[in-house]
Amino acid sequence: MMKYKIGLIPLLFLVFVACGKDKNPTSSPPSFGYESFHSGCKGTSGTEKLTINSSNDSIQVVHLNAHYNSCAEIKVEVKKTDYGFDLFEKDEGTTCEGTCDSDVTTIIHKLSGGTYLIRVFDTGRNSVGQGYVEVQPRDDGGPQG
Image (cartoon, rainbow, N blue to C red):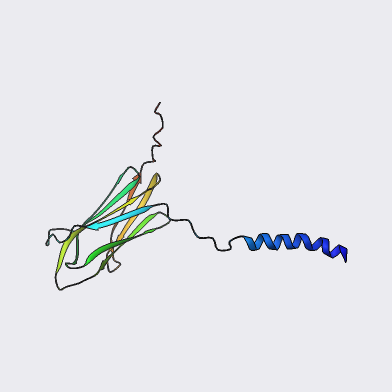
């Protein structure tokens, strides 16, 4: 009987250790942040165009002359992909009969250095365009030699 008690102690220890660990740890928060805004109606001002630029640890994406409902609020959802980010424009809130052009701007920040593929989709999930942008590695602000 004593032989079984000795073997039971390590087994109980393993059970307690295994049960004490979180089996479904919460995922860490995304390592980036973003914000978006739109210009409001500009009338019908021209050709639709996509510009993608980087500065410091940020990427700025501007969908120029996006043609949407004139009363809706345009929001952007940013999703991280294996190669960069997908931006999904959505119109929310009140809608009305009229449409107009506005500029939709999204800024993705807190990025590490590297090359990112940016893809933008309109409210119907149609591709607006895509492009690559390079973000320079952050300077840690330490002494320069």
